[in-house]
Image 1 (tube, rainbow, N blue to C red):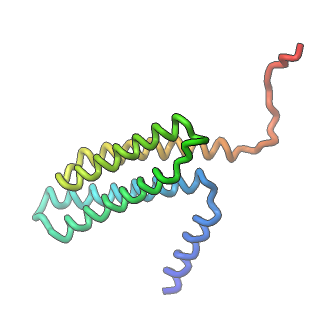
Image 2 (cartoon, rainbow, N blue to C red; image 1 turned 60 degrees about the vertical axis):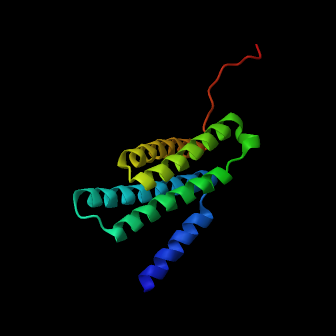
Image 3 (cartoon, helix red, strand yellow; image 1 turned 30 degrees about the vertical axis):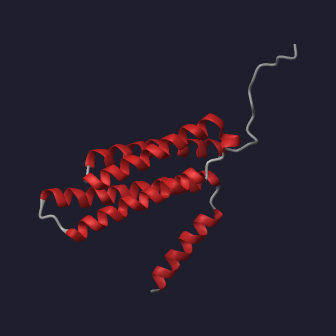
Length: 147
């Protein structure tokens, strides 16, 4: 029990102290984890006896991912984000539509496509976060345009 409490406290502290980029990466990580879980369960269902309990677990994993994507959608800042925010909103909307259809049809290919696209977005955010975390006091080399 003490381990679970310590782990819960660690996770809560990690979220509370994370920067915005890290929070987005955490959301992507959880979405990928849920889709991987859904894909694994779906593969088990496709190779063996269909289990109603497993189908429910697949649905929960996909729905949890949809909730994460919706959270990402509502966190978009269209004023500062401009075209990038609008494009992400469209992409997130498409993700949710695909996941809804994939859940209904138990379509591994659609789930995999969304999972892989989320992973690419995660990698891009990871790169952006790493760049913004670089020391600000490094020497900037440029061209003197003053003459």
